[in-house]
Amino acid sequence: MRLGKVSGISFDLDDTLWPFEVVVERAEATLHAWLLENAPKTASVLPAPQALAQLRAEYERSRPDLAGDFRALRIGSISLALELAKEDVTLADLAYDVFYSARHQVEFFEDVMPALHWLSARFPLVAVTNGNADLRLTGGGEFFRAALSASSVGVAKPEAEIFHAAARAVEVAPAEMLHVGDDYHLDVLGALDAGFQAAWLVRRNRLEIARVEKNTREPHLTIRDLSMLCEALGGPGSLS
Ligand SMILES: [Mg+2]
Image (cartoon, rainbow, N blue to C red; front, side, top):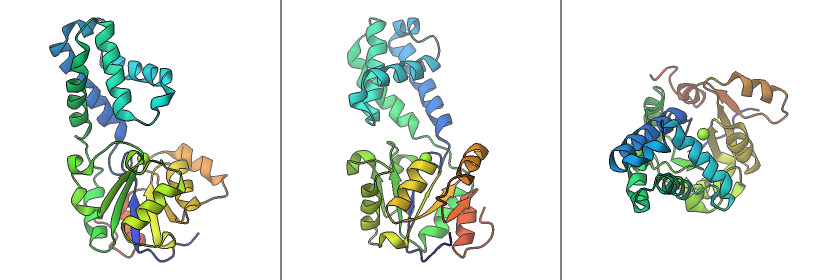
């Protein structure tokens, strides 16, 4: 598919602007250290930071009603750890604040800042995430006209409604919107179904490429980094 006219760009956040797994691992390590210091008996149920992730996953399975509510899932799993360790459960909110703050210590991929700088001078940009990252806390918010999340809109990607809300936020018709994201299902198919153009960002995942080669629904662009996106939109070859 050829790229058509682009008048606005929407961006996924996690794994598109920064690597997600590493930031969560680091935030869990920070939370773990905080718990051991402020509720020492949690050491018995949380021998290592990884135990926090396990507990969080178990808690999520036991509470399907909380799906997508990252704050509630995290606070609930912290409360569970405190309860199991016979520590003060009311510490959970404070512990969550420590985690939430650490979760925003992201490291942008190196192509991101130069690209956002170039793109935001030419197109209105809007963030569309299913997660709970806040661009005011991660940095980079100055490049975006608006930021939407599944929890603020009430529906998540790949639903068309969240893409349409993004188009409205920058006052651009869906057909002239280009959505950029790493997740083939949520970002590419979601955007195409909403009448957007789609740029699939594949930084390293060769397996996903293999999968889509057999798929009939192709993105308008497949890019390795955001400087390739700028190039496709008429920018200089390498911005970083
Ligand atoms: Mg993503």
